[in-house]
Image (cartoon, rainbow, N blue to C red; front, side):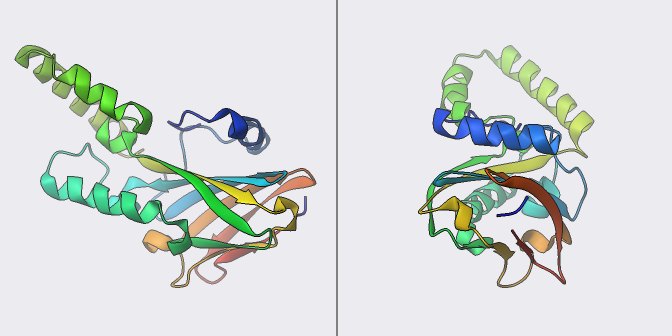
Length: 206
């Protein structure tokens, strides 16, 4: 290879990903542009870590908090797809195998991936008044952040040699979720770089 989201990073991934975020200047705000997404890749030793930030509108078709069964189903369908990176992109070189995936829909569900079960347990003890106050607060926050809702996914790959990674390619049907462009940033032991992937050029060479 040439030269923060709602996740709780596992210790073995934190260093490389933190370096990537520091080098790229990426914040938790995400792209916030309809039709555009961000992908950040960190390679170190036999590991490759990828964060994909995509506007909720592109992924599920709405940016507000989930309230209907239809919206819940859209989130469920999107979750199933996002957990299959081979349906979204491929890595050429390095002989990489997916080890772990974390999907964060908290921007539209109000519940982070790692605390969803805990949230439901606590909610069972709310009174009706407390629940109503919570719902009112949630909807107010959704109204403020309605134009800034991103879905974030974190992929962890185990590779024979991450330095042998040659290319990241989206497809086979072009960019996912009808995106028009994806800003790709990467960092490795040998350097860092960035490129923009488009419908005409759905890949980036390292």
